[in-house]
Image 1 (cartoon, rainbow, N blue to C red):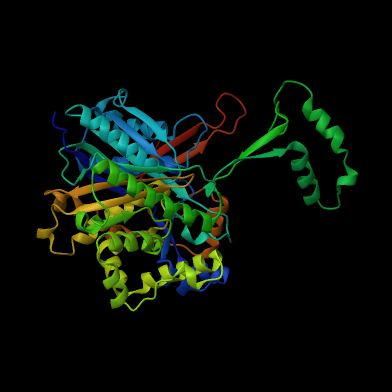
Image 2 (image 1 turned 120 degrees about the horizontal axis):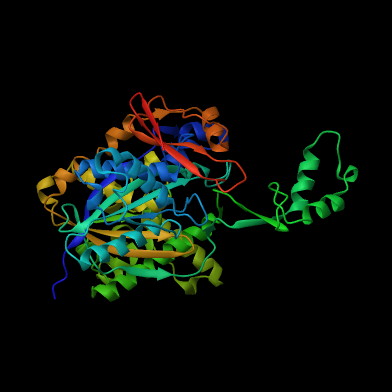
Length: 514
């Protein structure tokens, strides 16, 4: 039985209207801008406005996708969301997306227009969107006529003055998944590599009521812990069954969930490098391809990019292995005048491994590798430089970036070219799969307009950036917000409506709230 061709028919990108220049962050943090710009490829970071969250960004991307493709609600069988910026511990963020879309289309299609649309969140750090894509591809392949939407949406936020701060970003990518796609046909073979790791995670932090009380007391003027009977306060908070506040609850400890992660940068890089290599091996096994053929089988490479130049810095080992398998390694070494480390020349293993790391760095500086990067990897980097990390959406932004860059080349030779996609999510898992550019790609990609959208955003200063990061602003900063969904309010009453989120749509001068 012939497997139908399935893939991505179209993409839509939503990026907030605000951005913060990396050069301004470098000044505020006393960092060398050239290292961030030339070394990591960073120029700007997209910043979510005060009334934006993962749900509004996802809804904006999906709405654009629906309008571009003249789709009705009844055409869509599912909307699967990949995110690590979920708004609730139980209620899927995708249901908020559906709520906004349903309200938007009610006048035209009725209040139950999305009643039979399946929605769910998939979370595995930055690879949740690829998990959602793989699941939806298999669903679409199972029956002709099925149309699904995969959307990724994240606010990649780190603590201020942390090593991850300059990689921040925000936005959403939506993609239309169906049989006989106009844009990308996706190979059904997905290579996967999974290992438990704590390279980057967002734990529920456990704190005692006493710790909170003590910290508050220490912040009060002219009061010390000795002036307060903490034992008595703890006893009062432990009595009774009624819940009358945040501290007056039935649990002895409180769990705090923060949007910012706990992470180990060097360890995360090691996990990234190891997992994509292992996933590539698995892809070859499943696909039946041979080592050394990667650069013959694929014309471009797209990656999850925590920062724009991550892939070019992490790919040198695979590059080296491919040259060895293809029989081109010796010629590469001689041509670039490189000296390969030999273990016998070093007193201990640590010195040898350090030398190997230095050698790989020299490989990345070779003329051959630089040319390889410019031809195969760089087309997928430029948008990341101006947006920052999109977490689950990063790898798809790299795909979109590659395709829009190809519009500036000989477009007649693009159809039929293949892209190898390297996705990664901390925790940790990588997936590798192939995508082939279809004959109708130009018409689809011409409507991405990524560069034009990025050119028409609003820059903010450091003071505004810090206010948005701290969450102290209640109104949007952007001068123009028409044609987008926004967060209207969050119920704060301590009853059955606590935490309920209401959204609206800004359409010109008309503000609608749901």
